[in-house]
Image (tube, rainbow, N blue to C red):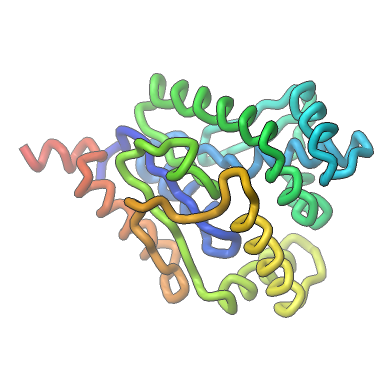
Length: 239
């Protein structure tokens, strides 16, 4: 199919397969990968460790400004470091999931991390040439000029079932009803926040993953990238 050249902005709510799709697509297209949600999660971990209320905006912003972190952009082995500690598994725990929405709603935190995300994206483009970026405000805020913006969706029932299965696989007890409540809560918080609410960019392509396998989604997105002229071999074939 060829290597990706440029940015694919991948947005959508939890349970749509966003992370798996983004990592797999980046790997298959020899591109970099950036999970912006992980950056908000690591700030959330630092906030909780500091004993700060996630709803205390000024205190949360202070924590975000002073921590040291590093995020990997290799899709085959993404990692997240907080003050030199590997925290990739820790930031996926239920405590972080519950607290990340109020932390990510703090305008100063979003301003700081969006600037960092843009810096990382430029660095990957300069070295690798292409990057798949996932999150909830990529096409609308972080990379509004991305040549391909995709907004993944899925039915609430499917998303809850997927989240429950993920929790079970990770050794966490979770019923589908529990997962549905968590998904609904996160959707409401993310879509109603003042700073960069969750929404599809006007020029985003919406892809419903409810009845699609990961491979089917990857094929669909690869074809979109090809038609946009973002893949080496497709570009050569078109000449």
